[in-house]
Length: 425
Image (cartoon, rainbow, N blue to C red; front, top):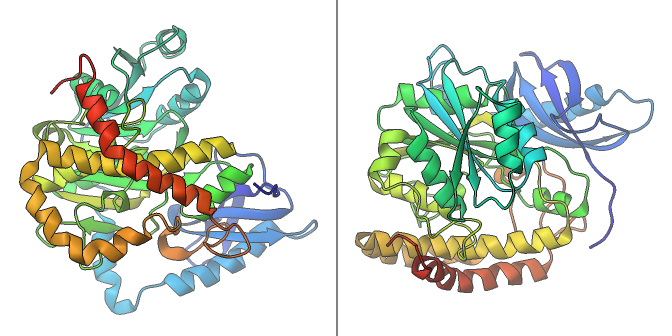
């Protein structure tokens, strides 16, 4: 993998007129330095776009990036006739009181990154929430010691000895008392408004079963991090969206089986009653099991299949620390593929009534499926460090091959996890 300079990650604040109010490093990132800068653009505090720009020594980076942001926002501005529709899609008004929430963080042997995540979660502006750490198949007492000493009285500790992210999440669900159950990872920093923005839509829409949010990179310091983000990373763009099983989206022919477009497990919340009625997470899926992933995708489809709506809101933001090495990226590519087909297998094993619906969608969805591993296209197609197929950061064919190999393995991995000793049937 070719070496390339690090990209600074920052936040650019604009007022309602588009004037730059300030530029600061993203949470957990070093201060920007001359060179390339990847910036989240906020307008009156709300995430609105990302831009990638370059400034030289002696230039004002805020001014350089503000000019790029103005062009970006003008390009993405909706026609005036669509303003009311977009306002409705964005979700509830800011004065809506979000319901009581439980935040579940599953972790294993990463106390340093966990502490960073917990510090951000303790700074949330949500008025009524609890924090639960699930220590998954621990090999040492490091996580227990951290939570019960440094965070005693502020964070609850739960131990789950069965390995796997879904099993850990189910343990968190069993322990949680909130009306809304939010999930994030131990390698994120949550924006102070994250939980409020993630939970408030449930108060405004009784039929809502799940909400997902925006995930941006906390650092872009290694080639692997830059490559992943340049092909979409975990971001789903800045356009709010409502997925309603009663009104399937015309642009997603495999809906609801294209669960990867809905969001990611590092930033998701469920109405507790809906998730529990759907049976929670399938414990034979997820990182830490032979299936290698798919726990979040399974839960999204399970809740949608039960008739609940799913909302994506970019106002709910977390900053994710991408894995740093080339081998990490190889593992992720394989895991993405395996998790995709493992979750589909889990869905059909546990919900065989959905098989006719999936088969009916296959003819129209074949073209979509063929593009899933061609490259990690960025949501909204803008503001990312590079583009697929260009000289900037081309996606290696070896990673696409690994992802396809993972797809072939996924059903096998799921069945291995289902048949492992002690696994629930």
